[in-house]
Length: 338
Ligand code: NAD
Ligand code: UFG
Image 1 (spheres, protein in one colour):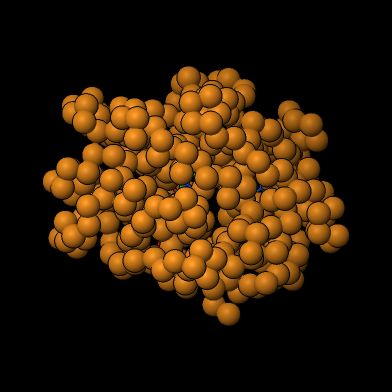
Image 2 (image 1 turned 90 degrees about the vertical axis):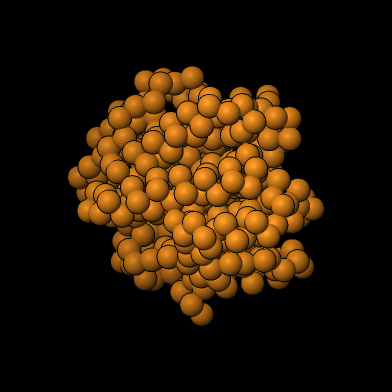
């Protein structure tokens, strides 16, 4: 298939481009590089032996997108482009609504104009809010997102659902990711956060590499195995392969489908710390801090729908994720800036 990948030079996008190219698809990436580096796509080409057509474009720019989508005959769009920092979204809500929601509406208009009515969207487990059912299946009602970032994901889902209802020629797959970590086993591509990492694994790897003194563990008084928060960590390569599998649903003209992409297992913060220490023979100093505002205690998936319908399931375990995260960080202590 010919596939337009928005946000394809970012963390999940670059890993997905590898898997798409390995599966024989032709990929064109558009990204405004607001949170990524074009070098990631050079590294992708080193891994796959295939160059990636790249355009530095903001998805809010109708004319620029129009000319690209007009030039290629895309069979499907995989839409990663968006801002994703939860804390920043609280400070700058308008930027988040403009970039994520307005950007997506613009993208959908361009795709519609060129009759490319197939799209896979990067949604998030955060749309479940404080989940009513654990493990979380796709039937679990959506909840209150505690921040504008989460609201944009929920709103974009609703926009896409309305669009598909209005025109059954659209095939739309909403993928609700749980917590992606890890990196490609080559160590050539990985997560490259700006500034102080918000998320657990990049913080741990920065402690391991000596950039940060110790990990802050946010809360040890939750009702969980050891009091720390529980999440469903998924290897980014498994997540990337989930997108390749989701193309099958598009090919079968699925209408609107929603899938969780997770492993179905929950691990606490301290379990992740200890798994990282075991996998890499390192010590991670940590200190317990108060709970972080907006965090839920427990969030992990029922991932059986994706297995049943897409024949996809996560293959890598937590040790693999910890090994590959560290392999990326130690080989690229400054990300793509080396
Ligand atoms: P990322 O920041 O590495 O990738 C997003 C990419 O989109 C970046 O390369 C950025 O430059 C680009 N971008 C942002 N706004 C753009 C715009 N207006 N026009 C063009 N490009 C733009 O993040 P990621 O972790 O790879 O996440 C990819 C997608 O998955 C995002 O939509 C994110 O919200 C979603 N998601 C991520 C997680 C996670 O934990 N990483 C969890 C759930 C959902
Ligand atoms: N945590 C710490 N210390 C840190 C960072 C995180 O203890 O320095 C804890 C958190 O309190 C939480 C767990 O580690 O219990 C995971 O936190 P992350 O920030 O890594 O991930 P979240 O589950 O909060 O959120 C992530 C993404 C969201 C996405 C969500 C579900 O940041 O964008 O997963 O996919 F919506």
